[in-house]
Image 1 (tube, rainbow, N blue to C red):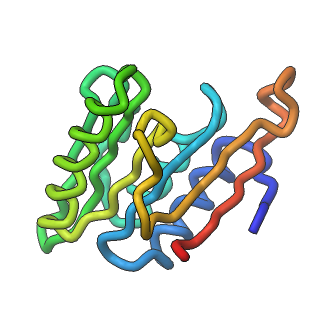
Image 2 (image 1 turned 180 degrees about the vertical axis):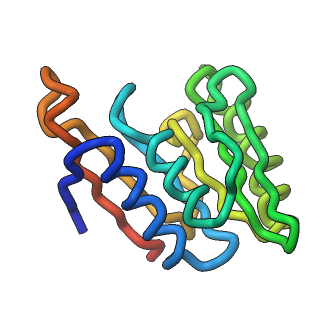
Length: 146
């Protein structure tokens, strides 16, 4: 499914709705260029899960955990700074284990840093409608696990 999103608010609203439809423990691989809206989508996912704290890109921390008091929550992973696939694979495996233990969603930005795409993941591609005009909106494509 491909859908047009008019702005950041629409991207967050899409994330909120998506969070309500995803099975607990889902893994989302978020691909897209810088500024395409990956973190914005994760902000919406968090809101949909009932997470109230601010969601920022974990580019420097690499991973952020947002557990919920009654279980579940969100693990947000950003592999952008990892140049070696082995390092990305190792961090992904650690965070996947943590997310599964929490029953949390795992949202992974820059999954192309991994040596291969993990099986059983939701694939989400975000792109700017017009790369020369970020205000023109975004396109989002969501593919469910096979």
